[in-house]
Every structure is written in C-alpha cells, then in structure tokens.
Amino acid sequence: MVKELRELREKSSEDLITELDRLRAELVLVRSRTVAGGGLEKTAQVRNIRRRIARILTILRERGIKL
Image 1 (cartoon, rainbow, N blue to C red):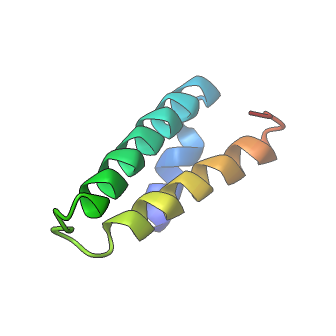
Image 2: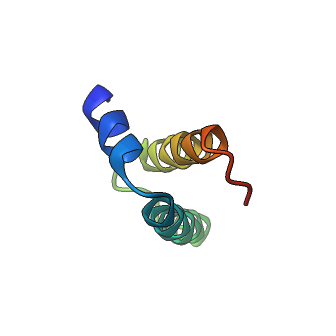
C-alpha cells in the first residue's frame, strides 16, 4: 500500500483526475453487474475501488484542488 500511495503522490493532478474518472466509471459497472445478478468475481472489488477513490480525493484535497 505504501508503494501505491507513493505512486499516486508522484502523479500530476491531471493524471489523478483522469484516474478518478476511470475508477468512478469502473465502480458503476461493478455495481450494475452486482445488481443484475452477475455477482462479483472478487467480493472485495467494490471496497478496493472505493478506497482508491478516497485516496485520490485526499491527495487532491491536500493539493487544494476542488472537484
């Protein structure tokens, strides 16, 4: 996890916003698959995506960028 945080902090703000948009779209797809009855291959997938989104938002807020 420390490596992941270091990599996120090294990215530019534009890259983080792009990553954030991608993760939000992925979260919608995973949730829609779950609701449709498809289930999850990995049960922790939603939680991991939400945590990564939260990490990115925290870094952006530290930089003073409001979304």
